Length: 175
Image (tube, rainbow, N blue to C red):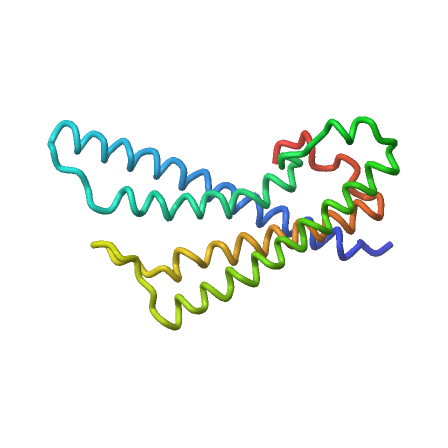
């Protein structure tokens, strides 16, 4: 019996999502430590840094876009449940499929726009208009990566859910 290639691909995406979420967690630790350091330097030595606020702002994009696909895979995205609880299982499944299609449409547009903006930032060498002058292509590239992973996660979950192979598979797992 051969393994379902969609399920195999979804298993691989789940591992990538876990790695990205772990990286996002490490970035959160770094941002927290950096902001603490900046506050300490500002109040005790009257010498704030010039880079911590800007870098922390950029790193929030990394946190959001690296952790969002993992949150979807774990079933932790926000859902409006007042309607779902009143529907029968078939209607709930249809509603989930419709929501997934709409979300995939959004992710496709987001990926297209983020890719376009990142490419422009790379080719035109956009830099932040601050003393740090950070190259913005490296800031924007995470939106492309995160949008791609989010779109792939939505697509594979929708296919598996439509086939009936996803029924509560990720909710409650530890990894």
